[in-house]
Length: 165
Image (tube, rainbow, N blue to C red; front, side, top):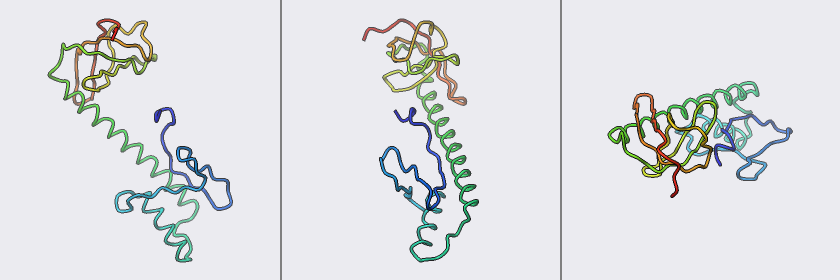
């Protein structure tokens, strides 16, 4: 479900303009602030709120805020990429000694780029490099682990049979 919603994005909503709010929380007025000592967007929000509460002018121009929002979104996207890569590499390392083992799986993605499956024990996703013809998202399949690459975070399976579990 989260994948369907898409990634979050930092935006500037100026006073007097319509605000989109937060879709997931179903609120119009929304500001995200969690731990200002850990995340720069939260620090910016805190500075803006402190200025407003103290009756001081805002510490950033509208153009500065737009640039900062864009920068924070780009940085968060980069951090997410690193996080995904670390997760993939960890999964590949976990399975590295299990080449040749067979697993029950569900097809989680099927496109021109390839077909992906998620095995159930342990819950890990990898690419179906052999036997993907005719499979679609949601299909249950029995797969065999054929290769892992920890550095690249690759986990390759081949289809053994359609599962009946």
